[in-house]
Length: 192
Image (cartoon, rainbow, N blue to C red; front, side, top):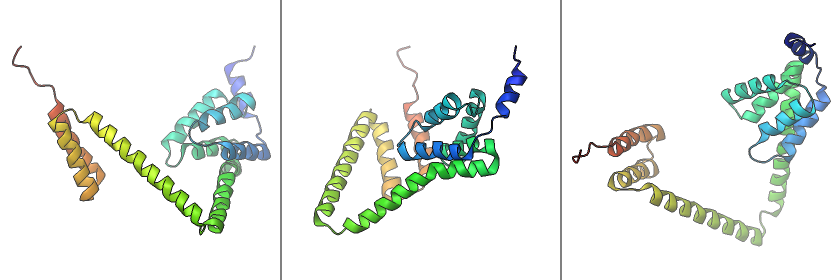
């Protein structure tokens, strides 16, 4: 019968091959877009390749979310640390190399076709559509959040102070937030 300490010892003895570490994170970096990457890393390093125990992975995930920087980059470093500093560098490079090359390639392609009239028109159309969607979102969000005069005043004050006067966000939100909470605070009814 295996004890818990033997299981941890056995887990600590796993040597992660640097090439495998690089290819796993290179594949994650190349074929991923958006969120859910920590789930992919979990599948790769806990379920498919037992490089980490579930407990180690969850600890690494928690640390990667606390540290500054992107969670997935921090997680790659934590997983790579199974092979020391070199492993952390290999995992991080594997994660970032494919997106780096893709951006360089897209930049080179864009420089080649940037002067084409049809591309400029297409990008102007995409820009107009994005602005339209943003305005629609603002309109719907503003309409649903204005429930009375106090909330309309808070929305207007926030817009004027940040959008027009360019005041810092944190003090404005803090000040308007106090006003909003005071305005929305439940009042004692005279009917009681």
